[in-house]
Image (cartoon, rainbow, N blue to C red; front, side, top):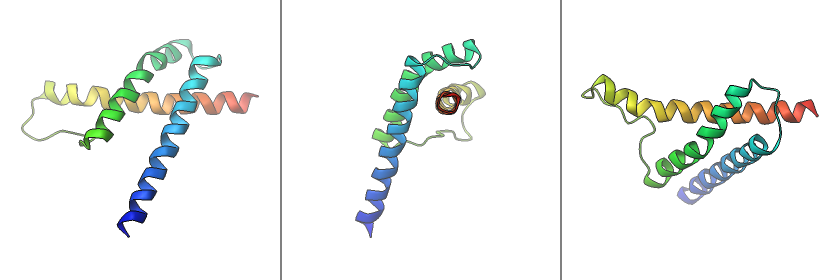
Length: 103
């Protein structure tokens, strides 16, 4: 039972990375109809989000490492990479979907 669950996790993670890397390839190669400053910010944050996600997955850290003893500045410095990564994931996926549907 444990082996089957581990295989599912590996398969889902593999599918996520393949889709995310394909959307990054589309982001850098194809020109998009999305507002240009959004594309520029996605191109800046895309490599950082891959790096951030890989560290979280490798170290098995919490995705939201926040506790009640943190100050406001500490919370924001923990949330900014998470929000930037989520923005990048959704932005690159939406960009890929728009480019594929425009063909």
